[in-house]
Image (cartoon, rainbow, N blue to C red; front, side):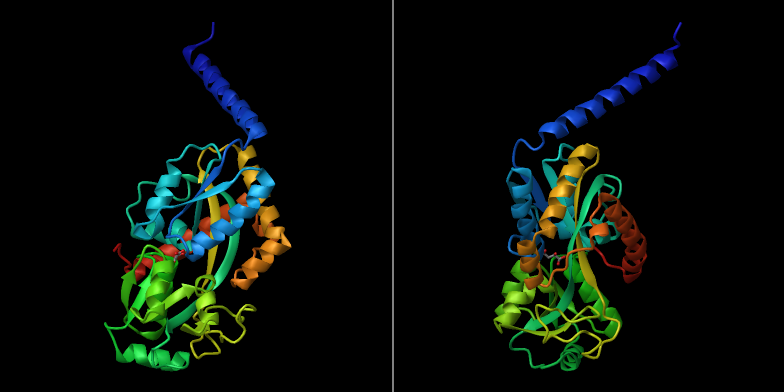
Length: 329
Ligand code: MLT
């Protein structure tokens, strides 16, 4: 006679078996409708731009269009919360980066666990930050800019995409390395921040290179240094922070793609393959490189590699962010 516990064990196994079979069956026909990428910042910014470039090419691989949904607020944590609660069916992707999927966990009281409530799909291209100012600011190199900022403590304004965003973390990093004090002006993304920089409403942004590249080339803003050990091939005349006199100012903003926990493995594999195909496409590579974005090495383009990287970044940054006392806006 079967005991109750053995019956419930059999029941549990059959539920698990059914969900595995259902997941495999769903993956056979996936995708049968457009796929949404939730982008945590305003349209026109670096996150939005990269998500659209990837979505356009992943459509060719999967045969369904990708729809970008810009969900802003609280430096991207609202967007990630929306993705966490989405159905785990492969039709909602969470786009994010160091700020939205790491820093926010040390700043905001989040109703989700960014390490366990999402499943990794792949690492996406990364780019260094670039220190840029309004064209009217009286400095012609990084040392002069730092001197001007130091001479205007609590007045000099730095645009960010909110407390915990990449542009904000980079600004705090600049403050800790130089003893500067910046007045942060939060926006719903660095696209609106850049508009205000071009019009001279704010003084600087420590921005993702991909976001400022066009305005730098157009001469409407001034670039002083890139936060990488090498110059950007897309902008070889911008010195590295070391060359410009601020050794150690090194920050590369990485991006990633996730899905809600419980998404079938087979569907994650289909999404990963489409993203890998997009990053291997020479036409996509040229667009990315023109923006200063670098595709991760192929062995870093697996779900496992993003899982390991994500955990390591949480372990690295949370103590730094807590020590810096970064608070929500
Ligand atoms: C940031 O972290 O600064 C964001 O990526 C800005 C954006 O994408 O708009």
